[in-house]
Length: 250
Image 1 (cartoon, rainbow, N blue to C red):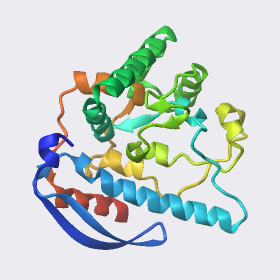
Image 2 (cartoon, rainbow, N blue to C red; image 1 turned 90 degrees about the horizontal axis):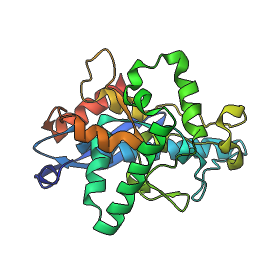
Image 3 (cartoon, rainbow, N blue to C red; image 1 turned 180 degrees about the vertical axis):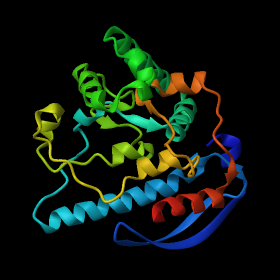
Image 4 (spheres, rainbow, N blue to C red; image 1 turned 60 degrees about the vertical axis):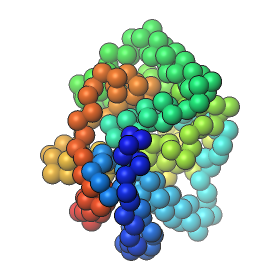
């Protein structure tokens, strides 16, 4: 959401819904005016927390637990595809950082792109939709082998944890975190979630479309935003919330 959109008048409402078997009651506040779909990211972040907490409770009920912790950054070297909505949100976030920190983050983005070019992966990742589904796992493993840390990774922890992409929030494991350094080894025990909000967000800009909007590899979000005009639709915030809830109920 751009600064002028964030400054618009807001509308608040109490909502109650059932998400993945959990009753959710919350007070939602969204811009009243026409905004991009990124305006509902805080709503999605809240719902993602509900899904994650329920998953943790279910694991604990059978004597297991989510093993992801701050300082365990192996998953932050995986290929992370984000929606265009989140790509633009994160690009705005980088631009809003104070100069010293922004410069450091920008340098890490540049280093990541350079590493991808050296590894021969850059052009492939610039056109992810051209990669056949049967080859996507191999591309992901080739990416992981480069050991390229997420540009937002600092001291093996996410420096934008509160604003991290939905797909990052949905990657949870119950196995030993040390096993995450070998994602192709078949020993990582992922936590199965009843709903993936990242997939719903990919459909949100055009809920009636037959295919979700394309994803962007996280290290390429700044390049993507700089080279692709923002053509995301603008609607009043309450309409985006209605569209989101419609997808949740579909």
